[in-house]
Length: 151
Image 1 (cartoon, rainbow, N blue to C red):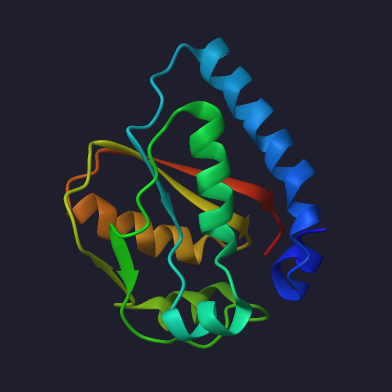
Image 2 (cartoon, rainbow, N blue to C red):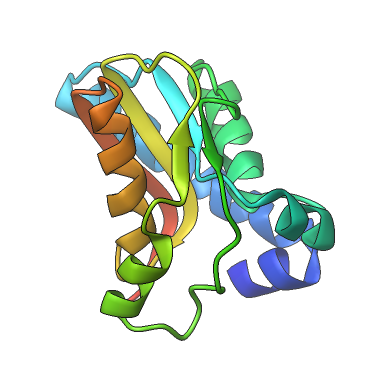
């Protein structure tokens, strides 16, 4: 479903996945008693890739979750500053090398944030993005994704 949504633009496949994640997060937040993040930050996509695909799936997911959970979303806090090779099919080491210096924090970052993405495989993207956010002042960084795949 994620692949058809992400690569074929069939957004209808994302709806049940996002609804399930939203329900899970609402329950987890209530049961844990933890404070919600102050801001949702979708994993940024390089502008040329976004134009080619027609949308940023992480942004779609973040906006839906933000609306359902009453958490603000900011798509401009972090930018991808250069184009990289697609991560799909790369090893963990190659993914980390591919992402070196790719994210730039462009605005103030609150202490509690959640990075939103569609799939976490090796964790390379969220690791590099979290590092940039930590350097900009984030203290608590959660990762919210539709799926976690072995990698």
